[in-house]
Length: 369
Image 1 (cartoon, rainbow, N blue to C red):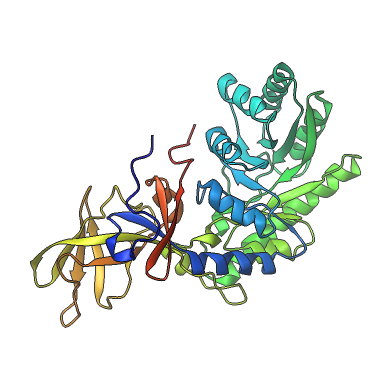
Image 2 (cartoon, one colour):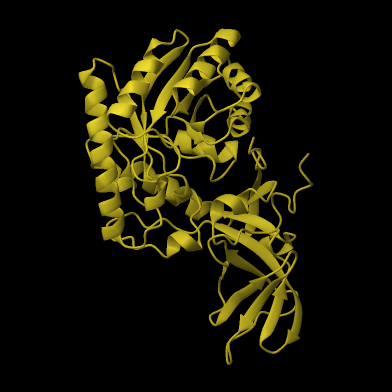
């Protein structure tokens, strides 16, 4: 059960308790509009694993998205419970209990799922038969990330044939996501990685269609590369997610030619101690943000660095001559990685200017099963 929120609509930002997860609504809305404009002409299916919040998904759909992606069945359940009618589980689902839940969910929404193994496809078919539904299935093809996915070309074709033979499955296309390319820093590196992915996806799609199967959807792409997939002539659905929030790690990428999405997500934190002239301590530690992609950035205080995190403390290093925040002062941090940071909170505190406008529950927090 979610904890009481750290704020109420209408109060000043200064009165929001900390640590809290802030969403700058003006920046968020500009990000939505920028992606809608950039992706014009292709289906947009943003990734909900970034925000885990049906209210965000509803606004993405209102801006033109066809639905959302999820990574876990429980995440998909939270989206459907929250009113989202079209969900792709862009991952493999293994195990009788999870597959039964997936099939039951298809009674309430349009649900698709990925497979990369013939035996797993059979298990998905069994679950769909038991529930009395027909599931759309995409074969996941490894186009360079070397995570999940059948090899491109003939192995993918063989799996497409298998899926097409099951009575309770509909072969719906191909999932070809190059996640490893999203945080390659230079435009040239990302372009080259996606060119390789596009070649594998094109060859595989053509083999499948030459077989007489309709590869209706070729889906993939992320915030760091989506313009390359968009212009490929192969992909017809895009899956960027982080563009709504952004983070410090994405901020290290080169963005020439891409929309420059704004930082809209922040950790709101309080200086709880100033034990030395070059050091201050905030109340946002490891339990308030993820450090897998590095420490957060301090906003509005040049020369102040978030240097070290422990469970409940964040140590700020203040450079000589730099202005330090005062004891009790509240400040914004840019999270290093938005997705796992969001998963630590129950609420998005939505602010416009210096006032709280709304609170949105992060309904899929902890939904990793």
